[in-house]
Amino acid sequence: MSTTPRRRADALRNRQQILAAAKRLYAAGEDAGPERVAREAGVGVGTLYRHFPNREALAAAVYDDELTLVANAADELLAGSPPAEALRGWMDRFARRLEDKRAMGDAMRALVASDIVTAHDSRARLAEAAQRLLDAGIAEGVFRAGSRGDDLVAALLGVHLACPETEHREQAGRLMDLVAAGFRA
Image 1: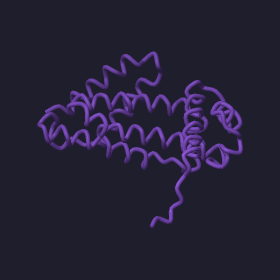
Image 2 (image 1 turned 180 degrees about the vertical axis):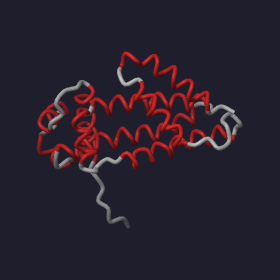
Image 3 (image 1 turned 90 degrees about the vertical axis):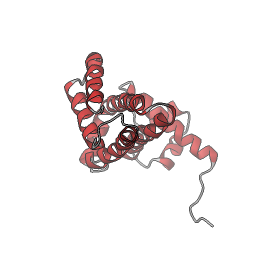
Image 4 (image 1 turned 135 degrees about the vertical axis):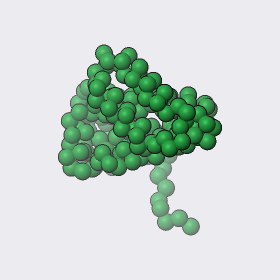
């Protein structure tokens, strides 16, 4: 018998609505303060505070949720596509995540400054997902033996740093194509 309490369905739904509202506000470059997020989510501010005791906890949950979605996308993409297509699709999701992270601006800086979010932990989770994609391709002879997920993540971060603005999106896509080609057998 489990001692972990189960969350009620409505509580889970409220949490997801709050996260979705915060993501929308961050993406739009708008204030994602608790009162505004609660209003956008259609819940009371007390409900928001039951899930997220402060602004930093909410921002950390948004960040973690996005990171989890990108990491889990590796397996989802592999289930429906050959490894080379799955890898390139995952790279696009990774790039969108970086854009979302940039939209969080001040909230991200606060999370990093307080060590709630660390680059090391984030990169490790992403590198594990990238490695699953690369390993699938290595097993099929599509990717070079010895291809490493942490190298892929570092290369994608480099593309993001070189092409940070949305007007550079086309160039970033070309660079990601080159990165993907570099892993081919």
